[in-house]
Image 1 (cartoon, rainbow, N blue to C red):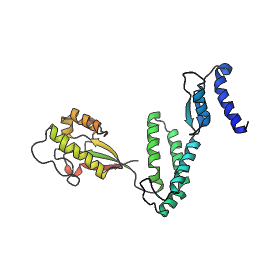
Image 2 (tube, one colour):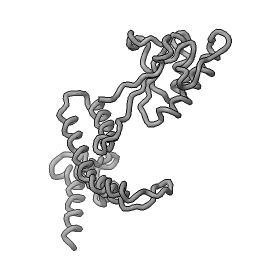
Image 3 (cartoon, rainbow, N blue to C red):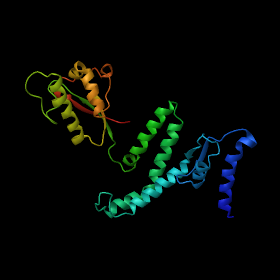
Image 4 (cartoon, one colour):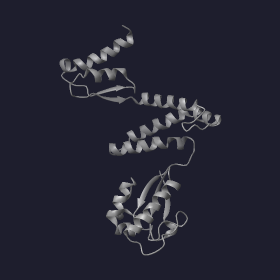
Length: 243
């Protein structure tokens, strides 16, 4: 029996004997993404109906991340079938270590932060997604705060809503639908946050139902910044950069 196979069986045997020898169950196994040992543990079910969970080691995750980046940098064509210039592939290849360090530092920063775990995970996920923008000096993704008035969105984007006074159906069909089209055209890569206006406050239930159906996040009316009046059409759309 080879050395590698021997230590795999030793780990597996440790799970099966933990109750008998130590009176405890091991809840987690720290392993890499394609661990054959973990697969054997799942198949043998050492604790009957109690499932052993796998935690991927940070180094394993970062190693796989770098390997994936090297794989991407070595391909002449993108997943969309477009030719990728050799300059861009070389740029990515030369910055793989920098990308890894950026994620490593972000993880360390959030691990030491004194906030709730759920928020820590959310913030870390955001930083990981934005790490290429930091490394390559691109513009960060932005949080877009969108306001609608009775006249609709700013004329720069979709023009005014014309005709009779705004009622519930006009507001949803003409204003809110234009909002989604505007976001898809101008802010498809940004984080969207809808800022309710006077009309949406008047039709609160219909607005909330429509926004949820469109999977668009929004802030409650009481949280709106007072200095940002939705009735000023020139200020209907404004952008706040993420920190």
